[in-house]
Length: 130
Image (cartoon, rainbow, N blue to C red; front, side, top):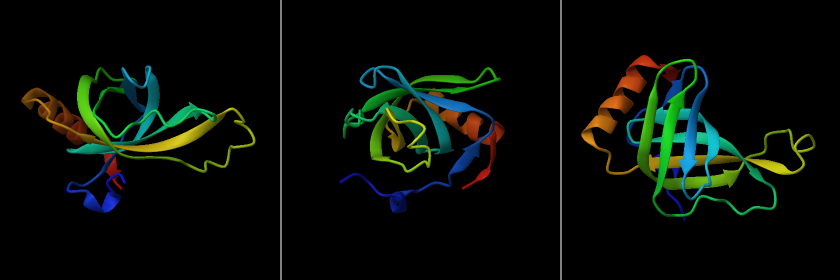
């Protein structure tokens, strides 16, 4: 079983504007919207074909983080999936061929520069806590 929300060590912040996570390479360049972010991980939603198994495996992944409308871009963030499940969005009848998934990622072995950039993002591009 994947880690639960109760294992969080740091406060989660809500990003300002549209903030995206790009899953690669195993996620075949899927993109999702970031719901919340902290110094040690992030929560996001992404769309997946209804007949496709979850592309999130219990193994290390690389993601990019970008903030729309700003020049913030952080690439190749190593992370491990904490959870990934279908989310009942209420749009199931509208989106018959896709399903909304909710995913949590834990950052792994960040470089000093990546830690600085995430801290900069938290201090300058968030609008509150969850």
